[in-house]
Image (cartoon, rainbow, N blue to C red; front, side, top):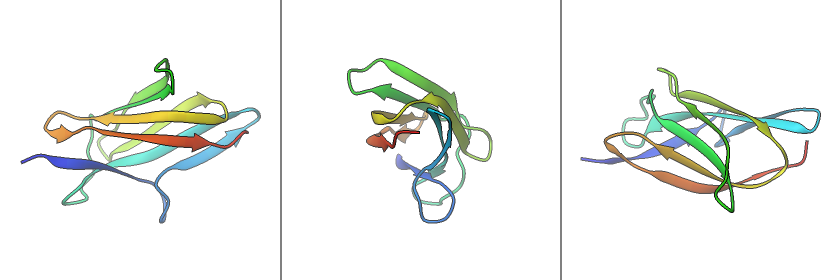
Length: 96
């Protein structure tokens, strides 16, 4: 059975943003949609609305990932892992 992949950050927020100068980093955790267990090995990709890659990462064993070199704007965040339905969503990053 395939479960939807969920992203969760600290507290009730979906993703965590931190800023240093004009660039922002985006971090979070990839979790199993049913059990909420962390999912390592998930591919997390951030791309522009036109489809060009901005940054990508693979989630660690505890489901954590971090994307860097992000400037303010609207992006597409995609998460893929074998055996799970892909997650794709639009993310708004405020200017640093």
